[in-house]
Structure formats: C-alpha cells, structure tokens
Length: 370
Figure (spheres, helix red, strand yellow):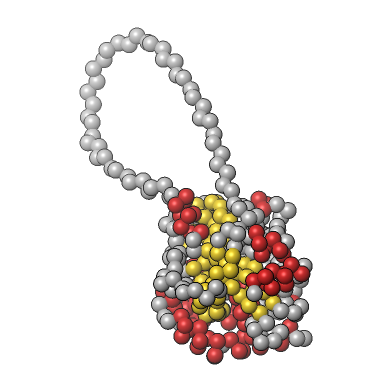
C-alpha cells in the first residue's frame, strides 16, 4: 500500500498543495492582523548555530597617592540584605529532545486530480493521542469522500525521515474558520490571518495493524496570557518547503530551532492572540501546525502563517497562542481546553462527524464544484 502512495505522490507535481503554501502576514499592527500566508515545511535537519564572543580583558593600573589621615564621624545606617533568587537557565537541549517526541507529520494523499496532496505538522497534546493542528490542514479530513468513497487518506508520520505510523480521524475543526475560509482550496496563493485556524485530530490505530501504545508522550498546553516579547522559545515542525514531492515522502525530517518571540498581535480586545518569531530554518512550507514551546517545556502556540522572503532568515513565522485557542473554543462550544480534552475523544469525534461535519463538508464542496 505504501509503495502505491509513493508512486502516486511521485507523479504529482503539485505535492505541496494549495493549503500548505505560506501565508504572507503584514507589518505589525497594534490591534488587528492582516491576511498572511499559510505556513509549510523546511530543510530536513535543523541546526543550531552558537556564536561565541571572545571576552576582552582589561588591566587597570593603580597609582599610589599620599594621603593625610583624617578622622570623620559618620552615622552608618543598618543595611538589610535582600536575596533575589535568579530563575534557572532553561535547559532547551532537554526541552528539544522531549518536544520532538510529541511532533507528527500529517500527510494527506488523494486519488484523482481534484485536490493536491498536502503535508503539515501536528502536536500530540494528550496521553490518549489527541493532536492539535491547523484548520487549513484538517479541512482535508472533511473531504475524505470528495472524489469517491475514501478517496482521501490522512496519516501521521513520525521519525526522521518521517514514516507512516498512525491512522487518524477528525475530532473537531473550528466551524468559524471553515465558514470564513470555504474558498481557500480554490485559491492559488491562499491568504489569511491565522484567526480560528485550529483543529483537533486523534490517533485511532497503527498503520501496520499492531497494537497502539497505552499512552503517548505529549506537550502540556499552556494557556497563560502573560506572553512577552523577547521570550525564548523552541520551534519544532516538519517543514518541507525546499523538498520535491518524492523527497517529502522519503526524506522529510523533523526540524527545530531556538529563537525569541518578537511582535505580539491581537485579533481584538488587546489580548495576545498571535505571536511572531524571527526567521529560522523552520520558516518554510509544511511547518503549519508546528509547536512553539516555552522555557517550561509546555506548548505556547502553534504555527499558522509565515511572511515572505527569499531565505528562511528573511521570514517570520506567526503562531496563534494556546490562550487564544482556549478563548475561541469557549466561544464556539462553551468549553475551555481543559474541559474539552478531558472528554472521551472517541465520542466527541463521533458526535462531531454526525452533527457538524456534513454541513462543513458541504460548505467546502459547494465552492469546489462551482
């Protein structure tokens, strides 16, 4: 079966697909964001460059001066010593090792020419195998029967190079995002802001038919609102921007880089909804859904868009914060992230597919068929 997929993708020149193209984001705005390009993947292996600066030593010459002894009466106030505990330096090497074990590549292949295959990234956020990703990637799950019964298949791949490991099913996709972006699959250069661009899928089985593990390594979701600029973060994803179709299939590797948060954006009300991080090796197509991990080894945001630029160092990535997703989920279904993830995901998925998915699928297919 996998050889058949290889053959199909090799013949598809449009492997990276319309959805996995980067979104171009505008310069920082104080209150709102403008449309940007959906982010996808980069070079197979990320490297971290450490620049060491030589410290300059200085010598001070002391000149001896004769002084006259004078007695001075002074009052010396009592000084209280205050001990300030400094925060330990984050061990990003350990955080990187841990975080990379929670990242998956989501690969969707299609029979026929109606849609292009797509590759993106997801983050495991629960021990039961729940994965957080982008709506612009997860909308493919709504189209599994578009060109015929089970004509579209999405799997999670792990490792470097990525290899098919888990079967997936859609648990939840933001209906607000689908309604506002139902024409996205028809656009040659899709644009967006990242607003409501989130979805959940879950692991349902092993591709090779073996038994699923009892629990999965996962990143805890940090919904803190006090995000600041110049905060150190780790980016982890499966970027594929410089790879051709067959290379994405055979040579796609997980990539990570340490950087600092830069500009903070809001969609409304002044809350921190979107964070920008400077260009790194991760700034490529395929990084959509990748993780932004903070110094506490928790998930701070997921990548949604990227700015333009000839080199990765010229591009910024943008990520919606977990705090924003938490607030958006409450607005859409009345549950916060903790309440949502504490449910039985099998039942949630079944209910969503029976009640919500048909209408959302129709919204997209009606546009595709025009």
